[in-house]
Amino acid sequence: MALSRPETGLRGEIKGKNAFELAESALRGEIKGKNAFELAESGLRGEIKGKNAFELAESGLRGEIKGKNAFELAESALRGENKGKNAFELAESGPWGEIKGKNAFELAESAPRGEIKGKNAFELAESGLRGEIKGKNAFVSLKPPNRIGVLKMHKVH
Image 1 (tube, rainbow, N blue to C red):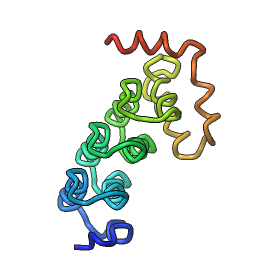
Image 2: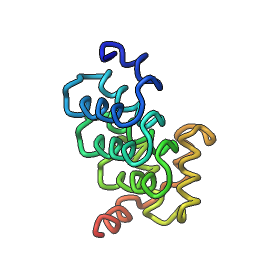
Image 3: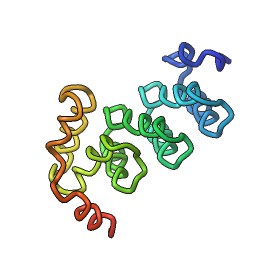
Image 4: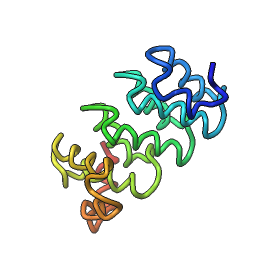
């Protein structure tokens, strides 16, 4: 197995369920550090398909992947590598602190506040992450003046 060089071994060379099991082993701590994250990330890029890719993203949010890497993993799903309702649920998780870091939080917050409506709004947010809308400024316009009050209301649910 090409575990010593995951940055070159996982871009399409390992397919299907076995790839997911390999990625899972990284999340369990059997493969350490940055390489483990790159291994998990490969699932989100489409090398691991369907529900398993979303489960892999979710595992980052549960704390199996720590700190900034967990956010980057979640962000990959928002870029469109996980589709439809599951991707939106991943974005929604931001207000509960499951996605870390200010930029992710501002992006995820906007849909629950109702500033962006339904699926189309989420697609708009997604387009920012894909680079169609550039930089932090793309999301700042979505932030309300009273973010804390809105958040408190949202957390009650």
